[in-house]
Amino acid sequence: MDVIVRDGFVGNIAVKFRSLAFQIFGLLKKSLTLPSLRKWRDAFKKRLQALRKTIDYTEYGGAPLLASAASVWIGTAASNANAVKNAIRVAAGLARRA
Image (cartoon, rainbow, N blue to C red):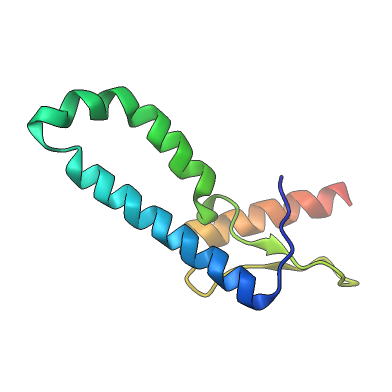
């Protein structure tokens, strides 16, 4: 697992870039539904899905809060049910290893 420690301002910019990446994925998905581009979409579909899963914050659910005496896992207010479920899963795994 990669860990990035940033202040609130830089962290907020990172979240905005993540949002931008998902917007780009949405535009790609729409553009690749044209009949002439369908064969390209099929060729890259698995790779795009793997990339999307890699940058999807809901797969991790949050990040550990460092420099805390307790084990603290933080998430974003925009977290959906999948993000909360995975945050609990990751935090429980970390607590078991501690």
